[in-house]
Length: 205
Ligand SMILES: CSC[C@@H](O)[C@@H](O)C(=O)COP(=O)(O)O
Ligand SMILES: [Zn+2]
View 1: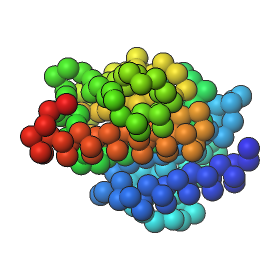
View 2: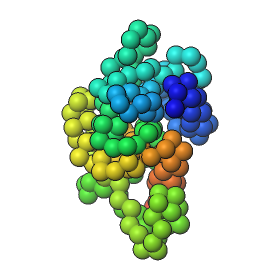
View 3: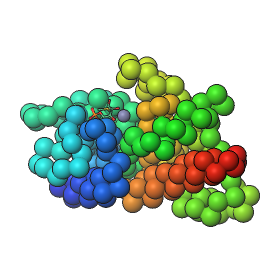
């Protein structure tokens, strides 16, 4: 797939997530694979308002997250997390957002290092079709030092689809295709929101 096609795909996903208000305060970053050999990808430029659509929204980087050639703009500060996903799996898209729900869930379940979901129809959107399937989302501590954060994140990357919560920071979700990554992210955020609403009603699942 061409760079231009990939750019448009990621820009459309960015617009859809922006419409959900999932990029508060310039938070969040998105990445899409452009080629496998050598591994190259597009990633959001750092510090930008991801609700706006501009020609400077993404930069083109190599397998280590370094700019390829002359480009204005800086790769996302959290590019190394996407580097880990793309180097370890065949995922084509990796999405990171900060929402109030994913932050609260990460704090509530931090002590156990994971949040577990079962008995929810929406887990079919994550590819779990068994009635008693169990979905586990690992929670890692937030580290200001990004190589340290990436080292804590990497052991939780097992397949071309997955998700990791970063405590009081956000979630990173990846998938085999850009649409799959977006679907997984939406399903996880649904589960987080549902769980918090139940808790607010005094029900603990
Ligand atoms: C502005 S708060 C969020 C940042 O510190 C970071 O966590 C984030 O998600 C966005 O950083 P960015 O460098 O724009 O990709
Ligand atoms: Zn972040």
